[in-house]
Length: 160
Image 1 (cartoon, rainbow, N blue to C red):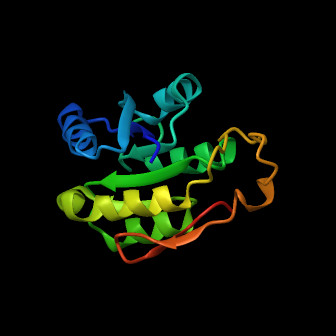
Image 2 (cartoon, rainbow, N blue to C red):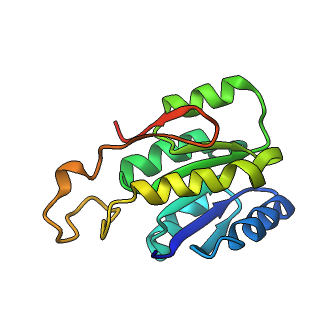
Protein backbone atom coordinates (compact mmCIF):
# COMPACT_ATOMS: atom_id res chain seq x y z
CA UNK A 1 0.00 0.00 0.00
CA UNK A 2 1.46 3.38 -0.95
CA UNK A 3 1.34 6.28 1.45
CA UNK A 4 -1.56 8.69 1.09
CA UNK A 5 -0.11 12.22 1.14
CA UNK A 6 -2.44 14.48 3.14
CA UNK A 7 -2.70 18.25 3.56
CA UNK A 8 -4.75 19.32 6.62
CA UNK A 9 -6.51 22.71 6.55
CA UNK A 10 -8.11 24.22 9.66
CA UNK A 11 -7.98 27.78 11.01
CA UNK A 12 -7.93 26.56 14.62
CA UNK A 13 -4.41 25.39 15.52
CA UNK A 14 -5.57 23.07 18.32
CA UNK A 15 -8.20 21.43 16.12
CA UNK A 16 -5.71 21.09 13.26
CA UNK A 17 -3.22 19.47 15.64
CA UNK A 18 -5.87 16.96 16.85
CA UNK A 19 -6.71 16.09 13.23
CA UNK A 20 -3.05 15.61 12.33
CA UNK A 21 -2.42 13.46 15.42
CA UNK A 22 -5.42 11.29 14.57
CA UNK A 23 -4.51 10.91 10.89
CA UNK A 24 -0.90 10.02 11.73
CA UNK A 25 -2.15 6.93 13.59
CA UNK A 26 -2.93 5.43 10.17
CA UNK A 27 0.27 3.82 8.89
CA UNK A 28 -0.79 4.55 5.32
CA UNK A 29 -1.05 8.32 5.83
CA UNK A 30 1.76 10.82 5.59
CA UNK A 31 0.94 14.40 6.57
CA UNK A 32 2.78 16.50 4.01
CA UNK A 33 1.54 19.88 5.20
CA UNK A 34 -0.80 22.00 7.23
CA UNK A 35 -2.59 25.25 6.40
CA UNK A 36 -4.73 27.63 8.38
CA UNK A 37 -6.90 28.85 5.51
CA UNK A 38 -7.93 28.11 1.97
CA UNK A 39 -5.64 30.68 0.41
CA UNK A 40 -2.54 28.91 1.76
CA UNK A 41 -3.67 25.66 0.17
CA UNK A 42 -2.97 26.75 -3.42
CA UNK A 43 0.71 27.45 -2.74
CA UNK A 44 1.14 24.33 -0.60
CA UNK A 45 -0.57 22.13 -3.16
CA UNK A 46 1.91 23.18 -5.83
CA UNK A 47 4.84 22.51 -3.48
CA UNK A 48 3.64 19.34 -1.75
CA UNK A 49 1.44 17.59 -4.32
CA UNK A 50 -0.96 15.96 -1.81
CA UNK A 51 -3.31 13.11 -2.71
CA UNK A 52 -5.93 14.31 -0.23
CA UNK A 53 -6.95 17.63 1.31
CA UNK A 54 -8.77 17.40 4.64
CA UNK A 55 -10.41 20.75 5.40
CA UNK A 56 -12.73 22.52 7.80
CA UNK A 57 -15.69 24.28 6.16
CA UNK A 58 -15.54 27.54 8.15
CA UNK A 59 -12.33 29.39 7.34
CA UNK A 60 -11.41 33.04 6.87
CA UNK A 61 -10.85 34.33 3.36
CA UNK A 62 -12.16 31.31 1.48
CA UNK A 63 -14.55 28.79 3.00
CA UNK A 64 -14.11 25.06 2.54
CA UNK A 65 -16.88 24.79 -0.05
CA UNK A 66 -15.24 27.36 -2.30
CA UNK A 67 -11.85 25.75 -1.70
CA UNK A 68 -13.14 22.30 -2.70
CA UNK A 69 -14.73 23.66 -5.86
CA UNK A 70 -11.60 25.53 -6.93
CA UNK A 71 -9.20 22.70 -6.05
CA UNK A 72 -11.24 20.11 -7.95
CA UNK A 73 -11.35 22.44 -10.96
CA UNK A 74 -7.56 22.87 -10.78
CA UNK A 75 -6.72 19.25 -9.88
CA UNK A 76 -9.61 16.93 -10.74
CA UNK A 77 -8.01 13.75 -9.38
CA UNK A 78 -7.14 15.20 -5.99
CA UNK A 79 -9.37 13.91 -3.20
CA UNK A 80 -11.11 16.32 -0.82
CA UNK A 81 -12.76 15.54 2.53
CA UNK A 82 -14.50 17.91 4.88
CA UNK A 83 -13.60 17.30 8.53
CA UNK A 84 -15.82 19.82 10.24
CA UNK A 85 -17.36 21.00 13.49
CA UNK A 86 -20.68 21.56 11.70
CA UNK A 87 -23.43 19.08 12.58
CA UNK A 88 -26.17 20.72 10.53
CA UNK A 89 -27.69 18.57 7.80
CA UNK A 90 -27.54 21.48 5.36
CA UNK A 91 -23.71 21.38 5.39
CA UNK A 92 -23.66 17.68 4.57
CA UNK A 93 -26.17 18.19 1.76
CA UNK A 94 -24.11 21.02 0.28
CA UNK A 95 -20.97 18.87 0.52
CA UNK A 96 -22.78 16.17 -1.47
CA UNK A 97 -23.56 18.69 -4.20
CA UNK A 98 -19.89 19.71 -4.45
CA UNK A 99 -17.09 17.57 -5.78
CA UNK A 100 -16.17 16.36 -2.28
CA UNK A 101 -15.11 12.81 -1.46
CA UNK A 102 -16.32 12.77 2.12
CA UNK A 103 -17.92 14.64 5.00
CA UNK A 104 -17.04 13.79 8.59
CA UNK A 105 -17.96 15.65 11.74
CA UNK A 106 -15.07 16.16 14.13
CA UNK A 107 -17.18 14.76 16.96
CA UNK A 108 -17.18 11.32 15.26
CA UNK A 109 -13.80 11.53 13.52
CA UNK A 110 -12.31 8.46 15.20
CA UNK A 111 -15.17 6.17 14.21
CA UNK A 112 -16.03 7.50 10.72
CA UNK A 113 -12.80 8.77 9.19
CA UNK A 114 -11.13 5.34 8.84
CA UNK A 115 -13.97 4.27 6.50
CA UNK A 116 -13.49 7.42 4.44
CA UNK A 117 -9.76 6.72 4.12
CA UNK A 118 -10.45 3.12 3.03
CA UNK A 119 -12.88 4.36 0.38
CA UNK A 120 -10.42 6.95 -0.91
CA UNK A 121 -7.61 4.40 -1.12
CA UNK A 122 -9.87 1.95 -2.93
CA UNK A 123 -10.75 4.53 -5.58
CA UNK A 124 -7.37 6.21 -6.05
CA UNK A 125 -6.18 5.79 -9.62
CA UNK A 126 -2.78 4.10 -9.57
CA UNK A 127 0.10 6.27 -10.74
CA UNK A 128 -2.32 9.14 -11.40
CA UNK A 129 -1.05 12.67 -11.59
CA UNK A 130 -3.52 15.12 -10.14
CA UNK A 131 -2.71 18.05 -12.39
CA UNK A 132 -4.66 17.06 -15.46
CA UNK A 133 -2.16 15.21 -17.60
CA UNK A 134 -1.51 11.56 -18.28
CA UNK A 135 0.90 9.87 -15.89
CA UNK A 136 1.92 7.48 -18.62
CA UNK A 137 -0.59 4.73 -17.90
CA UNK A 138 -2.58 5.47 -21.06
CA UNK A 139 -5.90 5.20 -19.23
CA UNK A 140 -7.13 8.74 -18.58
CA UNK A 141 -10.71 8.00 -19.62
CA UNK A 142 -11.55 6.33 -16.31
CA UNK A 143 -9.54 8.64 -14.06
CA UNK A 144 -12.36 11.12 -13.47
CA UNK A 145 -15.13 8.56 -12.91
CA UNK A 146 -15.83 7.78 -9.28
CA UNK A 147 -18.86 7.13 -7.19
CA UNK A 148 -18.76 5.53 -3.79
CA UNK A 149 -20.31 5.29 -0.36
CA UNK A 150 -18.45 6.98 2.46
CA UNK A 151 -18.52 6.57 6.21
CA UNK A 152 -21.41 8.97 6.67
CA UNK A 153 -23.55 6.53 4.72
CA UNK A 154 -24.17 9.20 2.11
CA UNK A 155 -22.85 8.98 -1.39
CA UNK A 156 -20.69 11.94 -2.26
CA UNK A 157 -20.27 12.46 -5.97
CA UNK A 158 -16.97 12.94 -7.66
CA UNK A 159 -15.68 14.99 -10.52
CA UNK A 160 -18.45 16.42 -12.62
